[in-house]
Amino acid sequence: MKILSVSNGDRLRKVWTADFVEALSALGELALEENGHALSDEEMVARARDHDVVIVGWDARPLPAALARDPGRLGFVCSYSGTIRSHVPIELVEAGIPVANWGDHPANGVAEAAMTLLLSVLKEVPALVRSAREGGFGLAGPLRGTLVGTNVGLYGCGVIGRRFVELLAPFGPQIHVHDPYATSLPDGCNRVASLEALAATSEVLVIHAGLSDETAGSVRAEHLARLPDGGIVINTARGAILDQEALFAELTSGRLRAGLDVLEPDFVEPEHPLRQLENCLLSFHQMEQWSWPERPGLDPMQRRCVDNVARFTRGESPEWLFDVDRYHRST
Image (cartoon, rainbow, N blue to C red; front, side, top):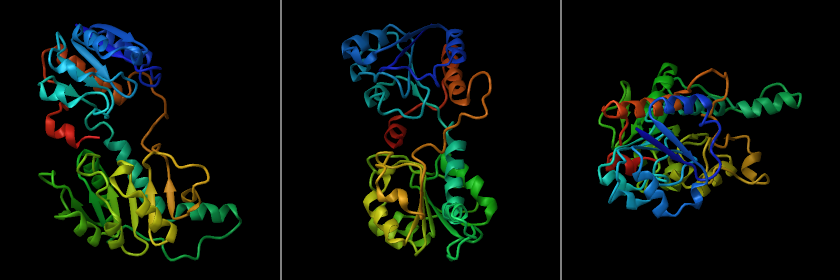
C-alpha cells in the first residue's frame, strides 16, 4: 500500500506530527513530498497515479481534474480536514473515486464556539468587561437577557447544527430551523419553510449552513430587517453566507448585536470601525480551534484520517464519503 501527501508549500506542523506520520506509516509506504506548488498538473497526476491513497488537507497541493480520466492505482482520496472543494475537483467524485473528509469531527468545537458567542453577546460580556476595567459597576442598559423562551432560529441543521441544538436545548428556548436538506430535525425543533419566515420568527439567528452556490449571500438585508431591535446574529459557518455590508450597517446603527467567528475574508483592518463596537464580538475564526490541554498521541482530526485510511487498506468502505450532492453542499 502506497500513501502520498504533497504539500503546496510549508507542511503544517500541527497536522503532520511525529505520531501522525508514524500511524500512517504503519499502514503503508508513506511519501511526504514538499513544494507541490512547483509541480505541473502532469507531474502531480503522475505521482497520484502511482499511489493507492492520496491525503489532502489545508496544506495540500490540489489534485488536477485530469486524474479522473485515468486514476492509475489511486483508489482513495482522504482529506484530514473538512475543506474539500479547494483540493479535490468534482470530476474525481463524478468518476467514482472514493473521497472522504473528517465528517462530523468539527461538530463539538464549532457548536461550542456558537454557544460561547451567543451567551457572551446575550449577556453583554464585552461591555461588562469594559465597564469593570474602567472602574464602573455593571451596565445600565436593558439588553442582557435569557435564553429561556427566546426564539432561536437555526439556518442549517447538519451535524454541527444538531450538536448546537443539544447544547442549546437545556436552556429552554424555542428552537426554529430552516434546512431544506434535513430529512428530520432534533426533538423540540420547529421546521420553518423559508429563510424569510425564519428571520421573522427569530429573535436570535444562528448560521450553521454550509457555504455553497445556493447559500452564498443568502442572508440579505431584508432578512436582517425582520429581526427585532436588539436581535442577535451568530455566525460560525462562513462569512460569505450573509451580506456583510448589510449586517455591518445594522451593527453600526446599534439595532442588532452579533457574535462573528467568521467573516469574508476572516479579517478586518485594525482601524475598521467594527472592532470598536461593543455590540459585536469578533473572534476571527479562532473559537473552534484547540491547543490545550496537550495530550499525547493522535488528536481526533488525525485519528479520523488514520481510521479511514485503515478502513481502505482492509478493503472496507471509508466513512464520510462524498457523493456529488454532498460535495456541492460542503464548504
